[in-house]
Image 1 (tube, rainbow, N blue to C red):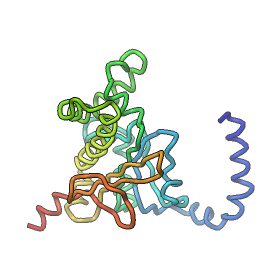
Image 2: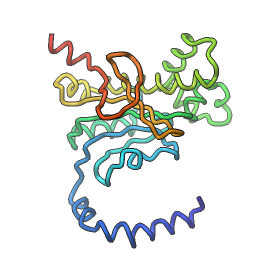
Image 3: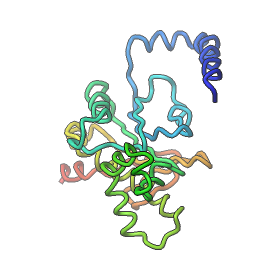
Length: 224
């Protein structure tokens, strides 16, 4: 899509959608109160608001290569600042980490040596923050086809990032008090389906009419 088409889209938005939803945008200008922190990949094939049918102001979105959340203290990242703001300032109670099928970042992770010369910054990003996913997949799923390994890597990466998310002090505190719920999702581009990790069975399953929040060990420990 050339930039000319983008500009045409901006004009169409202003002249049609904005005009018919002017009251909503006037309300949004007074402040935001999103309901969900949605962390996903930068991949152009994923539109969080489209796949969730959310309106402007309903999702607080963080996007990067591989839907990665660096562990607390691993770097002074924008991701960490966004998490603190979403939970601490906006009071968000549900956090989704959403991976997707055919993820180029995870494909690159499984062949990470090929990135050192061509994309050194991508190499550093994945090596620092997704190495545990790579190690888990290669050590435990030897003999699987490349496509099967990619699917496993996509799923395991989402779970790894959930674990990284739990290292943030504000998240651990909210989890302990039962004030935040975490969700691990995979969006399948070719079918439009979303699969959620069900901790009770240890698998991703189709998300239909109810959520499958990631089981919270802090809540269990607190309850005991």
